Image 1 (tube, rainbow, N blue to C red):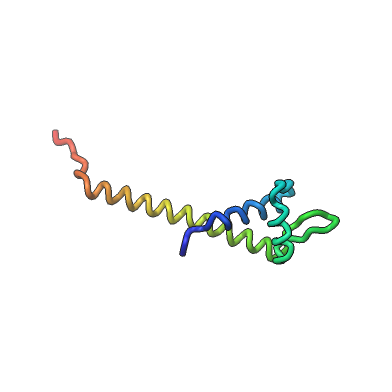
Image 2: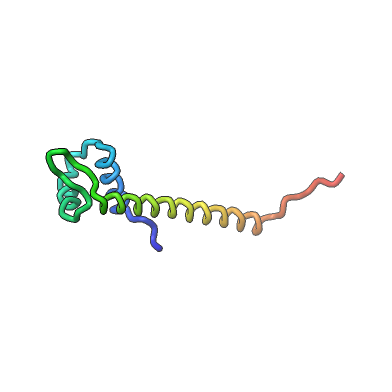
Length: 95
């Protein structure tokens, strides 16, 4: 699986801001319209809010971010382990 893209991270950020009732930025009007058209948010007299599909998309993207972070940690741990194997073994003091 490929790591989460910048576009998906931006989508997660917008969905999160809508869910938290944080005002969208000036340049977000186009994405807001696309989210309404795709059924991820509703925009009515009560303001912006996530639909059930928007909530599921948000959860899915959050899960991908968490999986990517875990995969990166595993890769770093493996690389650190290989560095120890390639280098000299730690010496033990004999006394």
